[in-house]
Image (cartoon, rainbow, N blue to C red; front, side):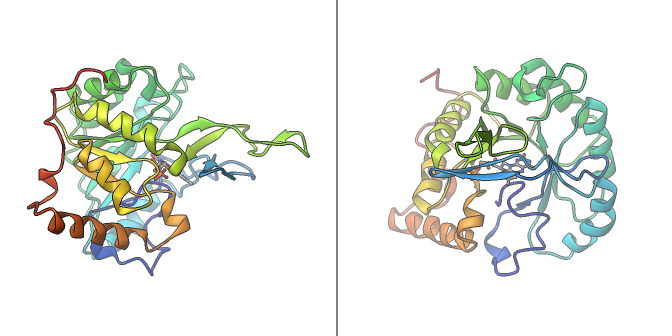
Length: 289
Ligand SMILES: Cc1cc2nc3c(=O)[nH]c(=O)nc-3n(C[C@H](O)[C@H](O)[C@H](O)COP(=O)(O)O)c2cc1C
């Protein structure tokens, strides 16, 4: 899959061969349109990048009316990434998308602050479960919950959303980071901090997947710093059922094709029937490593 926020709504990368994708995950979508943060919103860092886009998007109504009918004609499923600042907002977005032709599933971005507490939904197992349960009750669509790594115990949050009805989890969203322009003596990003992605976070993301996949019984989608077929294979071996590619799409738009072919070649070379043969231990057997 291509990861949320790095592939827009699927319309801007005609050179990518969509047939190699398991799914396209859309940009984070909110109830009302959002203009996002003021520039500067992106900073390149060693082996990665920081972003603080601020959830720029046209709002769920536009997505459902203008984009979904086009997706419905495609041969690849589109999963809408959903964001909000209250449980009610997540529920309203999910309800608007339920039953809309062209929308194949939802991915909840729970790295958003809850206006009531100011804390991100995804840092607290109770809040993460509450939003998951509320969305679950208004939609039949496959429901993926995207975990934030900026927590002490990611496994606790993964278990909580599994119990609340998530069909899968994706792990992980970006790590919070900062970069400072020493000449201007000012943070580079207008918001001061942003989300770190790219190869810099790969071992951290892989560890999160390794931990979560050992403890939940729903599929885990691995995401974070994947650049090559071997990177993707590491996640699949660690227990991920699928992977998402994010930052690499900016560097090599053909990466999805290369990685898809590379995984296929590995399966042939090692005489493995399919991806399910890859995880190096079954789910639910690991305690914290
Ligand atoms: C520019 C940019 C925008 C992003 N926007 C979203 C978003 O709207 N919703 C979301 O859940 N994740 C978003 N992400 C996080 C990615 O989907 C992914 O989880 C993260 O970048 C780690 O993967 P990577 O290292 O392969 O990029 C964004 C990432 C980037 C780089």
